[in-house]
Image (cartoon, rainbow over all chains, first blue to last red; front, top):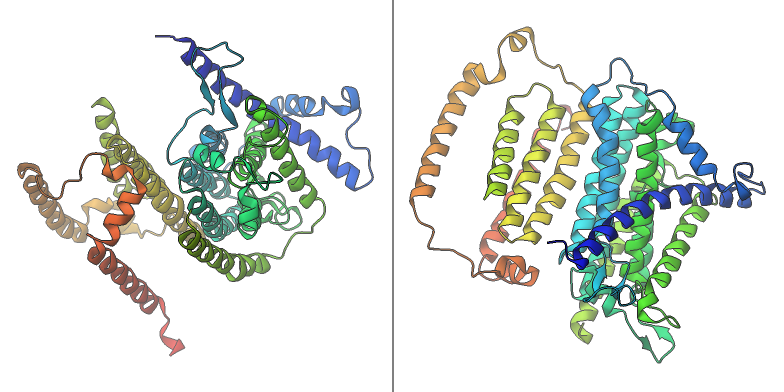
Length: 342
Length: 169
């Protein structure tokens, strides 16, 4: 039963899992270094060359910390919440394609897709898993039995409901252009270039959609300037106030992996995925990594540049500006697709 | 077939536990589990689109709102002393009303299981395509679709009227 293709598929799955874990560690390092650069500091520099082993030191420290639980906490849900968060973060990446079909330089007889699972409703699955991820945060807030955690959890559920609508509308307008629910199809739709210069990326057809998607994506991943669930000045640490050791680390991990997933999905939907000039198709994953890295840098840059919104501003922005804008964008896109053909 | 029984068992058990539960938060979570199992059944019926929509709409949006409200009220122990002594399912009101509902459900199930489903069947594979679902929804089932939206609006207006405080008039 163990054909080479099957073995390759299993190895690929393990590889994606491993790299997602790694990406969180790398993002911790990048976040601290970029923050230091923006604030004219040095950042971590003691552990390893240029402080590169700092994430490893952090993880070791977290592992040896004591696991604390408030006396009045709901024990079962308190343990379950970080598991939900981390599971949803990992699961969402399963349907994200990150490269063209490959035979690994002739190692395999038939090419396999650089993707854990090719599902024909991939876009919707990412959306569904993203909307399930909120339960981790909400339950963490409730089960801790602490007012700061509860407020953080409530804020995050209100925020995620508000921004999910715009997020979905931005997704839908790309689905109309790509005429498919499969991410692979949508990426292949963006191959080639207009006039041999401008790549046929959907970001050029959907500039508003891209902005809405990235804004709602930042809100969905609870990053600054929308990091209300964990606003430290008001809520201590928000929903994870009472967590320590590895269960805290799981929330931390989930946040960074969600960032990577949103960036990867944005790359596939708007930035042409693995298509790009100069490199051959088989090395397209380099383009993919570069684009994801650029988006992630943008995330970090935003966090250390913009101050946090006020809570009522966040709600007003989401419902009164972003949602109407995304509906109009969807209508215009639909009319355009109807008029010009997909 | 084994998977079918697994999903079905989870769905039925979780739904039963939803009403046999004192803490509303756990009721909400069990309902989500039941929706998850239902969505598994849809996948087995080769309707992945319906399965994912089930998760997005019910588990992802509606139940988050439920959880939000339950958390905002944060009243896991609103029961009186009498309620504490008597299990929710053993009180006179639920006993009579629930009995009627149970009999109705049993009759419906018997009717549905004995009648062979020859009408209203989809052609094979049609449910898996989004375009096919959309076309059917806006042609053959357009009336039912529109009636549903009217029903939802009526329910919304009803909720607003019920929640409005008297002294605001």
